[in-house]
Image 1 (tube, rainbow, N blue to C red):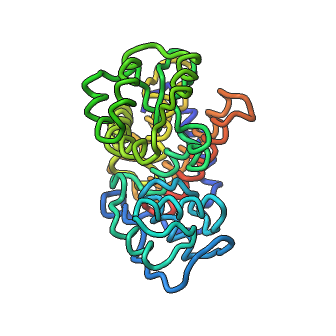
Image 2 (cartoon, rainbow, N blue to C red):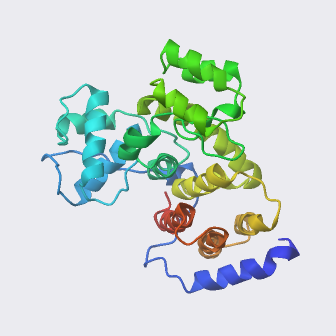
Length: 328
């Protein structure tokens, strides 16, 4: 480990020693075998608004396979109802907002969106990038201009400035109408502007969430996974939820490690390297890796207290510890 970060990492270890992982057993190992998620689910009663419990949590996990972007909290609230309606539309079932055995059976036939990551982790990234299904329907289904050096952005954070016309045609052509493709091709490779985003909305250019989700899974996640792996080479040895946390971090901040604002990201790199050393027993690895949560929290210094990014780092820290606890 580099001398520059030893004090910070040691401080993280010390904090981690006082953070009990809620009495959960230490993960037995971090490999593809430990990434298993949901057990099979047999729905015996219908689930609807106001229902709570393990069956609801299982339903939420399955809904996240198709892009519902739900917190798996076991509470059937408005977001869960919207997720059920969305899934029913995809499945060609009557749209009732009530989950039944037919919907559960269809959901279990759907593949996990990105097997290296936990489905809950994938849902978390998409939710942070879009605001969730209800928010997407109300605000984000139109092209937007995030500001700065960005281009016109569509779907789950897909920046048209940073793609080519050939790549755009290949990725989005199967999902969008010819008129929409023709209009958006004008923005490929170009700096965006607020007035242009407003113009596109006025023209009725919309991106269905089903299209946004497909490109997110097919292109964006694999790209950002590779970017994350370039700075954190042991990524694939972590539990799937922990992998998702690091991909979320890079999805949001990029993979540059240069500059004072990237100090915690460099410390995370050193922590992962230390944990990967073969002489460390598994209990020690778990303790070392737990300190990454402290680094995520430390990054909150970079933004105003009420910023969405402060909340995002806090959620990532929680998910990181949950991933270590569950080993998935």
